[in-house]
Image (cartoon, rainbow, N blue to C red; front, side, top):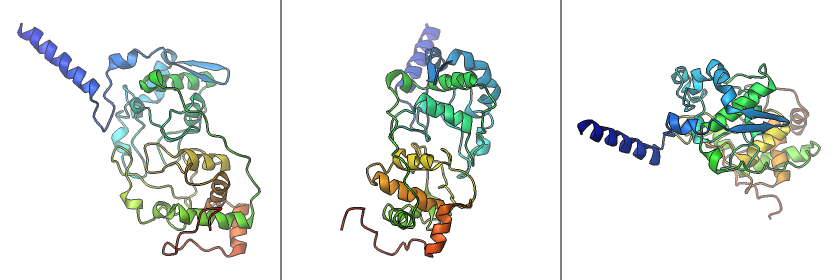
Amino acid sequence: MRTTLQNWTLLFGSAVLLAFPAAASAQLSTYDIETRIGAESHVGNVTGHAKDAALPYRRYCVGCHGPLGDGNGENADWFLTPMYQKPRDFQLGVFKCRSTPTGTLPTDQDLFDAITRGFDRSNMPQWNTLSKQERADLVAWVKHYSPRWANEKPGAPIQIPPEPEVTAERIKAGRDVFARVQCWKCHGVQGMANGPSASTLTDDLGRPIAPFNFTEGSRPKCGDTDQDIYRIFMTGLDGTPMPSFADNIKPDEAWDLVFYLRTFMRQHSKEKDLAKGLGLKPVDPNAPAPAASGQQ
């Protein structure tokens, strides 16, 4: 009788944990995760199967992301600094790099690209040496950790308009956008990640996180093409202080901001040459914020 009562107590306690997960992390059991082992991914003409990724995940990923996909692998504690974040907790189903609107799930292609590309300023390497099938299987494996994929569909990818020609006027307009939406508060007036808010930033789990330093030579985490940088503004980096600006800046203004940010980067570019020719100075935090495009 005592043993039976203890068992019921344990079962009830487990149910409570599952029903009321702690705010800091998802509390999913091995059993719950295994119910989704049939998860699939679809990347181009390749179908990935979670069940086929168990061994590759254990070989390449478990040391950081952990056997439960919660980011608590044996190596995870070595990474917890503002610059190098703890490995992703897949159980939460929240991802920085997406082509989809803020708050929505990424597409399978988004996850595939993240595995392939890796992340600068982190311990997540490029896995482009794995076959396309292996990477598609790993995408399905990542998905099987979170119940979000059982209950939600990925968001529709945002539309990126054609990139306009870079001009001096657009770069000056980009500086106005940078000032108006106060990018400098985190990234600094010269993009050096030393804005007044930089040292106070935390992610959604309360862990310190550093803003991106445009001047240090590393690539943005979600890709380094102009389209990639545009996408970051319009989707945000979920789980971080970087919001979506889809409701605050127009597509043309987003392109202007892309061009202005290029003037901070080490790499030689047309944008840097145009800014130099203009004698362009950093934004003045004490100046009144410029009006939005189309306003007086």
